[in-house]
Length: 398
Ligand SMILES: *Cc1c(COP(=O)(O)O)cnc(C)c1O
Image (tube, rainbow, N blue to C red):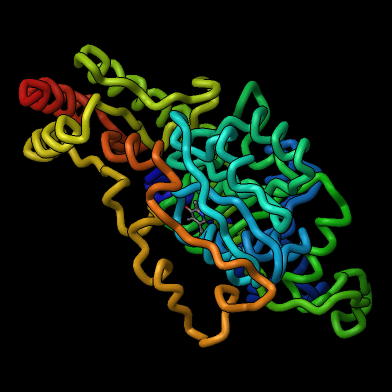
């Protein structure tokens, strides 16, 4: 549960500052706010941490995806390739901008399989959204090569892998744009919130303007006199979120090192089990270690082990059965059931796309026999000892 476990006096101190002025909005009110700009400071610190040129804070990770897709000019008639294993927001965001998500398979990283991308490309394909699920990266070197070859844009959904890296380069900085989420379950939290990173000034401006009704935020006199180029909407982050984000970002290194240590300890407990294999991680040192994923030779064995672990009080998830993170289980999505009768699904500019389990054989096989365990920041020796005993006992069920 990462950042949420560490909410404490540092966050409170950041918040308290805001109550001196009562200014909880991020823009304008320059005189009243007495030099306090929490969201702006959070953006600057975030961009610096990740070595990215520009950061745009928004109200959620889902909004970050929508704002980024809008900045990338993805819309009706376009197709976006997304992995079958992801949180629903990835697919919803594509539909929100009027485009169609096309489901692709995963590889042994449990993330988008670069080799399946060409199979899913049509003349309408405009972008790819690799998702770094459960804390560990997709094979970004290969994905970027495929994208370049086919002239596709890359938006990384890095909602679940804040701080993960491949050979020192952070996930969320490989593609044209990358997004982060700070909801309660993510690596650092702000209640609700999201961030977009990019090195492209033009894309940054489009995201910045779109997320706030077109304001260019350049007027030094009054917000009413801001210039405007494009229409937008309101996806602003507020100062309360920015303040908490600043305190949380300062804890990120601590979160990552604690998770990595705890994960390594549990990995060592599982390693002796015959036939058990760990998820492939492109650069193990860069795993953000929010989760530990391993597989067994068959679905039957995985189920038996999951049951035995559960009896020992050790919870794991089999994502093939998960309701929110595996496309074939989204009955309302498969039924193309939307709030409005007219949607991207029945827009004549879009191709009719199907989402069959047959199109994703690796996901069907691998996710069925993979178990995923959440790793906490706080796992004291006694808790780890209990897990060790539980694993040893459960292993006898195999
Ligand atoms: C959490 C999540 C999102 C959405 O973020 P919110 O801040 O909850 O809107 C998007 N993609 C993935 C993979 C996520 O896990």
